[in-house]
Length: 215
Image (cartoon, rainbow, N blue to C red; front, side, top):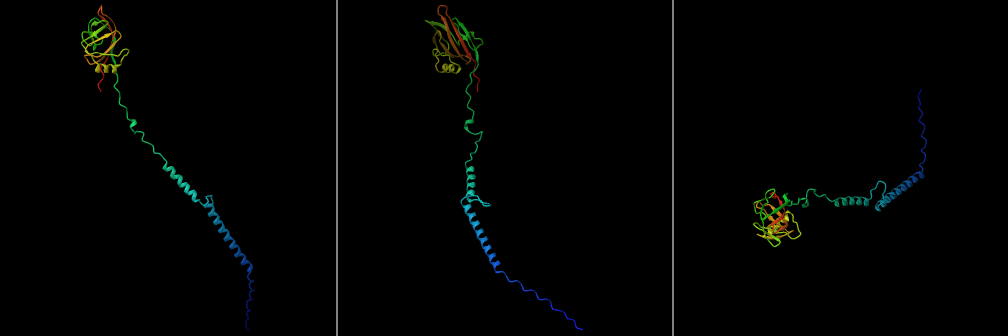
């Protein structure tokens, strides 16, 4: 007895392809391409005119940032050296005035005084009133510089007068002063306070500066 195998059933025919669906897909793809191109053109235009766009840095903004950075760098002013410059050099010190060694009154009766001693003593000719010329006393045995009337010079002025305008003898009236150098090299200022030719007395006020210290 022979066996019989029935053939497989035939497949149902495939449904026909829908032409409308393919056309619609192509149409949407074209629309999407146009939208994408429009967005790209709009983004470029926005960036070109300088307005910020998402994810895009404007070339104008970049140029302004670089310019600002260069401006700050080039206008920076360096600080000077605090220790430099000729203005910081110390000015030369002026000669300091020495201390007054002695100051006070002296009474002379045709006698001279040693003004290097403290107090001055009779026996030398640093200041020597001797004789009178009317109402003036004669100063002898030293060089004297007459001080301008009404002035009372300090050490420097008195030293300058005694150096530049010395006279070997001088007649001085009441109230006038002279500058002189002592035998020891000190500067002295002597004022004639009063005089009496009859008694041969002369009252003096003396100021003697100590020697200036050598530099």
